[in-house]
Length: 447
Image (tube, rainbow, N blue to C red; front, side, top):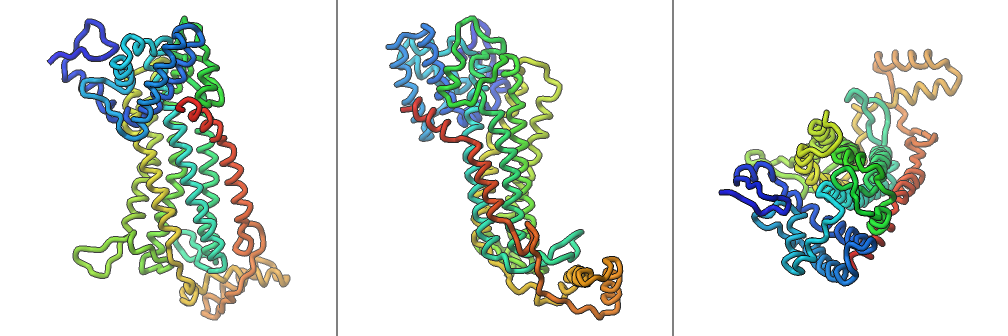
């Protein structure tokens, strides 16, 4: 069967098979972008009216219709119809059905290239915001647990060998501070994303006297993506940079999940996971498997591979648009949902995890206090290497007796966690996103 339903076609007709291959999963992926496509169209036509390409009456009816479509997209009722290629075509089709020729005027001065660039940046911007909020929620849980269990000691490990005294305060707090650094990368991704590509058209600008600063202000962007060729070169690069930030968060969560799985096993017995986050065995009645954290670890490891996947698609592409970039959507757009799910699950488990407060009653951990004894002797004036040898010989002779009362006072140690300072770093990083500016712009356009 031959098809000719796409808004961009002229007299060339394509078969169903070619259409299926070229469209791929675009209809499915474009549902992620629907409300952002409408939002961008609102800003674009508002600008078109100021340069005389729309009348005030035309703008008013178009904005009213677009706000209705926006509400459909927000509520999940927006559908890309069978035979319609993508979200851009669907929105224009809905406007044309309702308003006639006026609906066909919204595309003046733009291309589907800068349209999808804009949609992606608006989508990424919103997903970064939601991700940052969930990072902060997990951070808060970790800091709270760090304070609650700051005096409960546990073994610290190097090479998976018992090494030195640690504490649950340090363990929880370490992951909290890791999230602060991860949020710094997310902030960098936000700043790269929050620049307006609209008006770059197919990558070479437009002969219309577009007011790109106006659409930048209307959409709450920090600035323009100025050079129109570079704006198009940002396709793929923006996703890759954001994916690196997502991978940083995923790496922290995956490591936390691994620790929790290991520490909850019977051979460790340091923590107990919530029963509703474990599953049983079909043959072993005693089993409580940490499935939620195992799946979290796997999903986060998949996200850590995302930057490489994106780079593999966009490697060696010259300047200008290429259809290769369509494939990035399929791996990138759903990944935010997976990362946000992992953050929610991790916060849920960490808030409800049970701590073994008597780990060090087991004599297998006595030797981890050897460094404390070496330091005590050195503080009394014994040269460090002599103190080290004396304690080592006592251990070999089976004569070492641990002193389990320890006193660490320097910044970031067992006795001085610096959680207040870490929290200040998190707050300062979050404040730099300036989400309020975006909120005000979106509110103005949509109401």
